[in-house]
Amino acid sequence: MTRRTKKVLMTGRFGTRYGATLRKRVKTIELKSRSKFRCPICRVKAVKRKSSGIWECQKCGHVMTGGAWVLETAEGKRSKRILRK
Image (cartoon, rainbow, N blue to C red; front, side, top):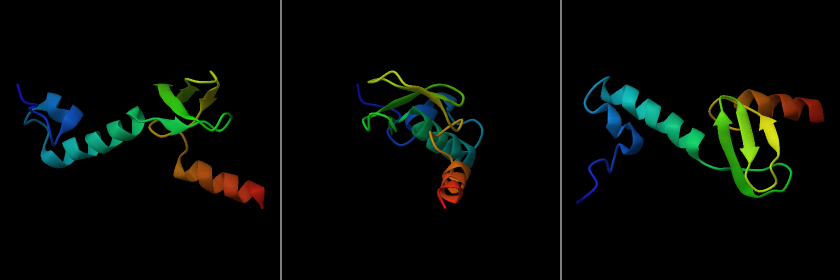
């Protein structure tokens, strides 16, 4: 059998409900939250989201807090940059 959700990926579960724009928004958020990020301790791309705002490195086991959907939010990056000055 062929894949039925080639374009929509994980939002295929919604079918035709909720509108295309909202499904596209959900798709971008879920792709970001389910991808792996680089660990600030061991520098390996192995950090995954455990729950909302809690992230864990699968290699070194380091648990850290961050954004709800991405490891480092834009505001967090901005505040780090200000603190470095």
